[in-house]
Image 1 (tube, rainbow, N blue to C red):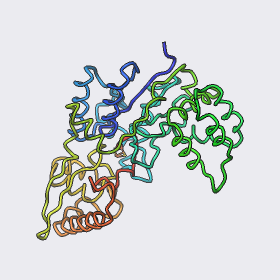
Image 2: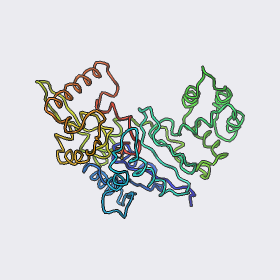
Image 3: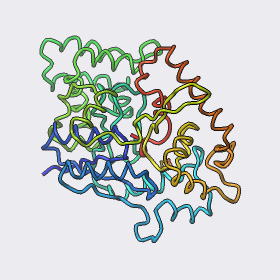
Image 4: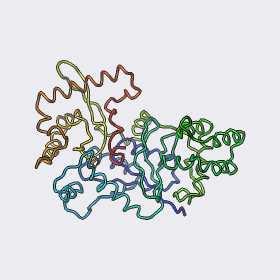
Length: 367
Ligand code: SF4
């Protein structure tokens, strides 16, 4: 029996849902435990997505609910403890209390591989646990390893060790080139990223196997495994693939991603919500608050009720100010201008302009 647990957190966002489906189908022998950390304040579409995934897997997704014995929602429970102090990007007690702590309690001291749905077209690393018994793996990227693993493997002080890994891996006629590359020390003109890219260009599977050999000399959870099927995975999945996986599986794309048309001063545009997470999340853009007000007025009112004793979700204006008619017009106009500017720049991410802020915020809530 494996000594390592395999965990995958479903945030309610499209990427983690697609990753769960992808691994479920491609690696059925990996005994993955799917979990979600419910804040009690998610959008209905998120709960629907979890339900759809449960139907697809034919099993329950574990709900790691913080303060589970409380009679109020986990978010409200901790808000009361914090004296009504609303979380913000500078003070994110919500992520810590509602997402990270329940996850780390669930893991305890077990050796864990945590699968993270950051895509091949994104440039970020997501949640990296500081606990040494939790190792993050990124199956959608060419580089499935977390930055700390790569940093250790390519550290100049262990060049001899990394070269010796070449003796343990089948590199066939690429051996000399791998040895040559691994021998070259990092420097300001030859960065870790340069070296890593060259290694992957030479061979993804081979580089993965070299890193896997190196890990055997460390305390990382994968050191306890005799093999790991993702070492041979050369697929790189990007935004379109995510939508395809969700559609083709029948699980579906959460409704809040679907664009809704609006008109302002004779000009047409469309909006949607770009991410999962609590309906009142302070990371959302102004246009998303307007979307919430117009498309989910009940949820907007609930968000508004939290604004008291001088606390507001946005630093510079209250929700009551944000929904003044002239303010809504201004937000929509600014948003249209921004999308137009982006269109002119021919951004590769144009498929979904709202996705512009996707990289910000909390990986535990939005992936
Ligand atoms: S979605 Fe936003 S408000 Fe909710 S826990 Fe995550 S960061 Fe906090």
